[in-house]
Image 1 (cartoon, chains in turn cyan, blue):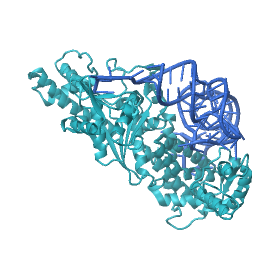
Image 2 (cartoon, rainbow, N blue to C red):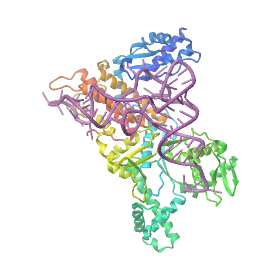
Image 3 (cartoon, chains in turn cyan, yellow):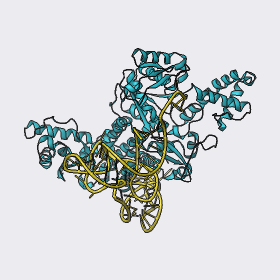
Image 4 (cartoon, protein in one colour):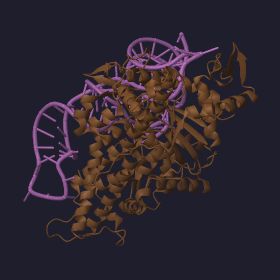
Length: 556
RNA sequence: GCCCCCGUAGCUCAGCUGGAUAGAGCGCCAGACUUCUAAUCUGUUGGUCGCAGGUUCGAAUCCUGCCGGGGGCGCCA
């Protein structure tokens, strides 16, 4: 019996009461009620606060309503007992058989256990990382690679049609600075003012020369153009490779420059002008963002005739919508939160609905620490921590997991020495170890010739009556709810935290409940039932880790 | 000055979107492997949930105001 089934049973009980006339609910019976796992074990397997929630509407004292409900609910299939506690909580115990049946259901569902059709039929565009192609991805961007990719997996698992997208800002002044920096390096000159000075500039400059040996013979402006075109492509390749090595592959790498060259920017501006949302002032073209909730209006075409930065975003958003995306999600660091207002206003100026068609997710920064002190990242000082540095130090799994297990609302401090040292007690290994242990049991079972029921026949779910078995089963039953919450709230960290809780429940079960027969012992139905529970648990870890893009090892 | 995020155990952080006695890991201390992987488990220690009000049956959670930390407020990108 899962929480969802219990919720249904409670709703059915409420309906029975209203049908019988012993309860009156002016707003009708709710479609779903809150079923939670109590923190205190004495409070039962599950608890619900419906009586407290509905007491006022029903015009009854909470405990009286709870009493009515308890009588009916106590008769429901799979419910062992219902107690009234405190101000009107219902503490529910579930029959072991009803609970144990879940193990077979999970094994039958396999890699789809936890999936849903919550976002079925929705085309979701998920844009993340989108780091400037003027250097390698550093830790500021890696967080979004880990979190964004996990969110994409969670959305897909929840039925959405997801497209992962990376926006290359390969247009404008920063790219000019990048090109000048490459050219200067190739000529052996010092890094220009406002230029980029890392070692990677030297390497890319040399790589450009290897491809275009005659580049330096050209006049400076033409040479710079060569370094721009070739250098940017080399940078793209490097970024894509880093992301690929990190397990993140985008469906679309979108080049901002194309929007300018194809006339898409011009068209977007025309569209906004037709809708009466632009005006000219001081030689520039302004977008009426204030009308749509922004602090003030924004320039979209500067007085020198060039598009302002946001002009690319206008065209890009329009392009996404024209490609049929109902929801455009963009993950940005807190250093960009100032754009939220104007982006939402831009969305509204197109006649769309901010928060629905466009959703901007702001996450907090990642800081680099050394000896507990914050270290200002500087390319010149060589104190930039790149994604590759992080992976070299602690590996892909540990990196992805560590970055994905925090709320994006909190700032993450990375002390590389500390992170590398703590590798062995990183929670990722706690979870992965659980999976490896489960795999090991299944291997041993196979060697012993013991088959878990399910494929080979039925099993008696009521045999899974041990306290630790119950706790493990209830943890497994939570998985679909956790995935759904992670998708709806855009909070992948919930999956990681859930896996840690479930790993704890499993390790405790493992400690007290022997799964396989020992010595000459003959396999019993209990052994087989536990083996099925093991298979179900392994399924949940495999599915959960997959959602985070972290491997589920068979051995450790 | 205005806007956003954070403040929970010595440290790092959860807290199921208002529920019961606020949890976990690490750290400290003490235990458990001739048996399915000890990267594990068991027990102990540890808290005015930044402060002050408010909303109600009930607040770490929602509202207001302070305090402290971080980030942002360009015809830069």
